[in-house]
Image (cartoon, rainbow, N blue to C red; front, side):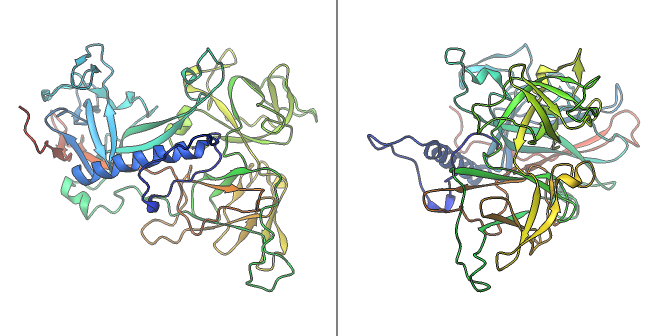
Length: 491
């Protein structure tokens, strides 16, 4: 989750219940973020223990994520409104109908009915028009498991401009947003809901196998295997972020890193390619941006690598495009890129302007120059020169090395990767990320040892098995949801 933060201090094994304020003390973002994490885990664990891995409230939202298939206008899938709990997370299809009425129990407008609807798609949303899954499609020629994918997203003013109060005109906080997406997976003919518990090899979708270890460069004067470490040598306290850019196993996966948790970012309002050249007179692209940054340290500069992305990329689990800055015009808010390799149509434009609904944005990443490998004695060797790989294998990201290879980021910080989990496919997933704090007072670095990603964590629940082909009038579809009823009857 990319945002401006000092560190992440939450550890569920500490068994902390809450955070208490002391008088006259400095306020830290990490304390209150930990409190939120403690409360969120308490709610999720309690819900998981009470309701199980996935369930919907049959008494109050019987149509919750109920799947109905139709072939009236070609293969179609419809999704019912309501609430479902997946691994303790609440996913809610609000239906977004103008027929919403006041719900006195929750004191809000709602279109979720406590009565189950008929077998018609009235009041349900089309699979292809989901609020958090742009351009959703499915294969109408194959039997499908229709399932729910739930995950948590970080939202800043870049994703939602309403988070900035015009009275102060600066961003103050961020939000955590529960994202739900109904997806499909092709399965063998005659698959049933019960088969999903045992005999379907590709269910559920594989989790990331990625692991990260952080250390500091050992002193070259020390004997092999000893830990006479000089520590973090940077001049500023930082929260580093390592994030997987391209998915895959070691060697084909790639990563990028930031010393500010990826928080140096801004909106892109226009993109120009025609007639633009870089400082060498070669064809290039130009971005018109909302801001160049808050100060000299937290701003964009020539030579920086930036990632251009938008909501569509994020919701589809795709990384953005990495490009290097050639020059900037601060007064005009213009960034000129080294190249003109923006993929045509990836970021739709109207008269050169980006689509405001897609929230096109750029993030600064801090990898640059020579990437060095570190041996057990602290000796450095050239892993590969990042700049020489621009446009070929590198394209601004660093290849994830095989296990046993340690890379130097900067200021004595090293990272090594592993994918040793036997329960996964041995691959890293796009968007996997790790955070770790570095402090100048004592040269300390938050050490991770074969740590799994801090996110993005996906949670899955089967909804239905649907078959369109081989039917004459109606497709075949079954209900795989688990109902849950309150333990106490309503009066």
